[in-house]
Amino acid sequence: MTGEVPVKYMIMTFGDESAWDTLGLGGREATWSQEQIDAHFQAMGEFYGELAANGELVTGFGLADPSHTMTIEIVDGRPVASDGPYAEAKEVLAGFGIIDVESHDRAVELAARFSALVETRVELRPVMDQGGQEM
Image (cartoon, rainbow, N blue to C red; front, side, top):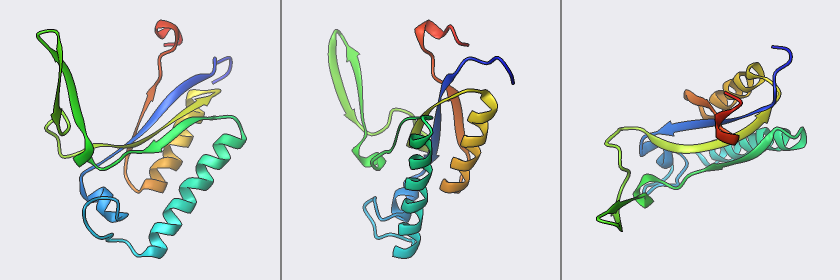
């Protein structure tokens, strides 16, 4: 697509609690071997390193396992915190990356590469700047 304005996108990956156990980051022993874990983190580091080197990486992180989640809401004008994710869902947000790319096609290309690295589907969503004017 020619003439596009650079746009930030968020690439999100989701998983159930076993996703953290795969890497030994949950409450259980890793189900992957140490070699698989090392290879995964090396590949992720190389991917993010490439994006940083070419100026397309804004930020990206894996998230702690869902047992550390809190939901905060305002009730009667006061903040109320409760344990656990708000949504009753099998899958929760596991990690994300924010990229700043020249085209939608490039965002799709990078999301596909990220999907291959995490071995599951990912969600790609534009990040709104300045009141969503780039939408």
